[in-house]
Length: 419
Image 1 (tube, rainbow, N blue to C red):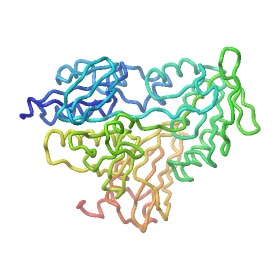
Image 2: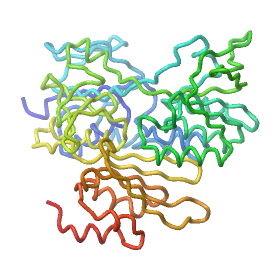
Image 3: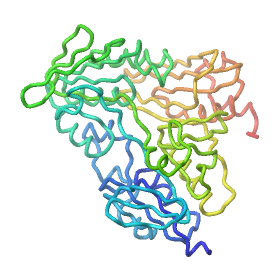
Image 4: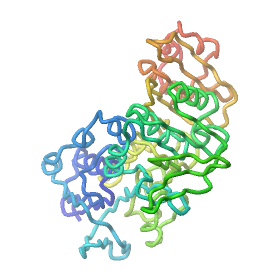
């Protein structure tokens, strides 16, 4: 069959799915592309939902990865508000809840994930909020107001970003984290300590080693009090940010290999050669890390989308190999993080003079002398160089890394050309 007569169906019209479709056209794919998702919005960026959008500094249009006419020009058949219900791998068809069935030559699963809900009475009360899509963010934005008492359950990046936005809206905010420190699963103590201090300086009541035992509700079903240990915290708004569950049920029912995500190789291929998976739902083999990982990261999703598109197009694909990176905006701090800190044996701090009251520093994580991860606070101009140091597993003198007077570009130049 010629490519022009082939059909690629992409399930999930979020950023990963949308970018896969666009990447196919950019590569010159001439077949039919169907992009189907259960939301009613065109593919959009999710990170601003807990940042600029929640703070009222961005609108829906600014979130779109492409305007509506771009999909038409690219001849991508976008079907919104539909949910895939079954995959028939033998017939190579997908069934949808609207009664439609689509045949495919290649199927890309960009199914994302769903928020982990609070497993107790009141967890779905009208004033309990979860943040995953535009509708969630709109509802939460309307709820945040001057004088509101907001309790955020979960001290990860989403919870902290929401807390910062709530403070800006004039709310009184408490953050509850069951672990002994904030960001326990995703950041080392030095960085977590910085964010804890930042939030407390801005009036947030940060409480760690505190689990939520119950939610008290009024006659209308609204939560009025959060019980955490021996504390009773009055609440007008409750925000829950306790993690993401990858959407793997459709893949599992179709007999694909699943383990904390849909298992794929370094080329985004599942156990069925006609089916690929990208984004938050994919548990992929990462060559740079030397292990499998499921990354909830926009840059990772974008890279996987390009790899998957190259496989579908029949090109010789390049494996997913870039060191993972992400960012977070909280108050006056822009954090950028690259690499994975696990197994590090040395932490190097690169401290710079504060800029207009905002902290400015970088942290480098070394393992056996090589730079394996780096975090930057308000130092975006040096972050690209830090990414390259991590990507090359550069061996650099820790004293020179710590010396802010030595440009990181100089350290890179001394390493010579990348292999």
